[in-house]
Amino acid sequence: MSAHDADPVLYHVGGRMPLHSTGVGLSCSPAHRPPCRSGSWATSPPIRPARTRQTPQKLRRVLADVRHSGFATVTLTVPWPRTSVAAPPLGFGGKVYAALSVVMPRAAVDHKDDERRSSRDLFCTAAAPGDATARVEIEGLLSAPTSRPLCHSCALPPADLVCSHLLHPQVTSVTDAGGIKSRDVVSALCDRGQKEVEEPEGCTAGGHSCWQRRVEVKPVRPARLPPLSVPEAFDVTDLAWRLAFGQRERFRGKPGSMKNTASLAVDCADLEEFESRMSALADVIDQIWPGDALLPADIDVEKASRSLDRLTEVLRHRLPASQQARVEEAVSALRRIRQVRNALQHSRTRGGLLAALRNLGVHDASPSWDDTWNIVRAQTVDALKILREELVQFSETSEIST
Image (cartoon, rainbow, N blue to C red; front, top):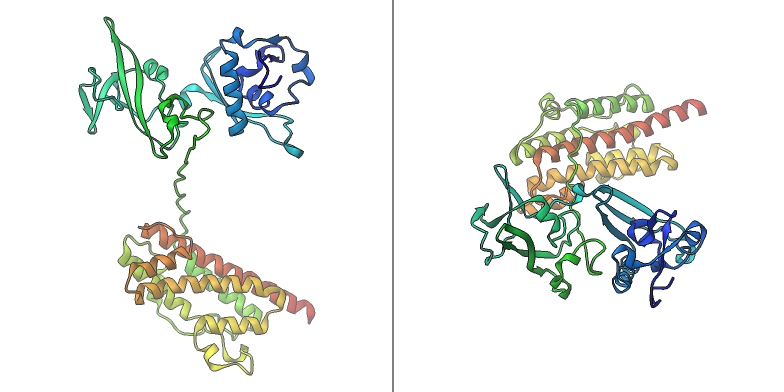
């Protein structure tokens, strides 16, 4: 069939359901042309839209929307309430060879943002000012009595599927002698100024072509490290360093305070404590001080005046080129961590600190300092692990070559 045919004819899926009554059927239907005329569908009994309460005109609009959006949404009530969202994987040349769908219980996608419970009663908080039944305020919102069946029959789309740009819907009650008969949307605003908002029932997936849905992903809280992870990472890296360069060499060649090392195992609750922990970590990083014997003979004094610069020169001089990429990655991570301490100590604005934190992957405008400290500790452990692995590989290669 063509969407331009005078009287569309669709086929049963497997001889059981009309093609246009399922998400899979619509997503690979004449909206996308063949293969809908092939296989069992072509040999199944044809059915006219009128027999499924679907007019040819409305069917053409549905097919046009599916063709434009690339997916189809169908809500059914028999034999049980459910919603199907389907889309066709496109093959070479944009041809449709199949369709995939997700079917979920209607209740899973049928709740609405404007539903509020007060004790055992359910209220609609999108009540229009002229709604005579709206006599209650809930959280400062004018509210009217409703029920699940009334909400399901209301044209306002469910919260999980409603367009993100639909704002300030107003719903009023239609009453008769027996009470509230239905609740209908009388107006709504569109944040993009689209005229389609005049038909709010289409502001949902598979509705108006301008529909958009923004999904806000909550940040995943990083896994908590054991308290002694960072001190142990430094100690084990020191062992790998001596294994690679000799028992007399030390990864942390400068003496340091045990208090600083102990601080690495403590959590923090606020910015002040975060600054204290970063100071301790920066001091421990500054203790990284390879011996002079490991440096190149012609080293510039300036390149060996800081701990991480000195570490870089030793690793460039001692390790083969094949290991340099990972080594530089690890040292760069330690530099970024050290820069957070510099921003805390020297930057006069929060902008410098936030920029340094963004380099670590912390993007919150007002970060959780405990989570941020945990991220710093995790990245420190990861950087030291990379160094340790490269040092062990170097020592094993050296033993084989000798």
